[in-house]
Amino acid sequence: CQSHLNFSRLLSHENALFAGFSLLGHSDYVNPDQASTNVPASIIMDVWAGVRISRRFEFQVTYKNLFDSGIYGAEPLPGSIQAALRWYFLN
Image 1 (cartoon, rainbow, N blue to C red):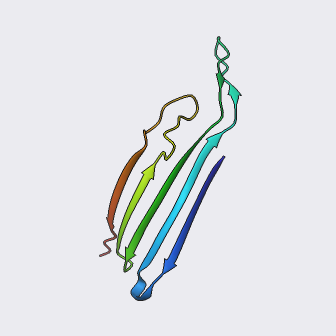
Image 2 (cartoon, rainbow, N blue to C red):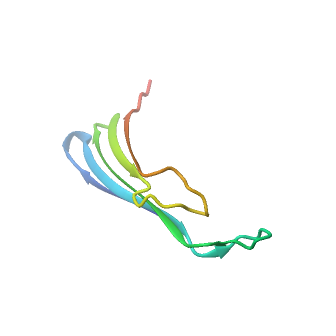
């Protein structure tokens, strides 16, 4: 399963506040290897919030893998905070 939800609050002068989350997960399954390994169900959740300053600048803070869980029997990115500053330059 996969889901992505983003909330935005539009402000004056083309500014905006936004926040959201995404989920990625799977149910239990048996890995078709020789040992028939059972892989338990798991889910990964990311959350973010940010501000858009005009249509050209955006600042966002994201917490990746909120529950520090594995997926598909592997350990992905550990729980971590990431920040991004985007400048959309159009000539």
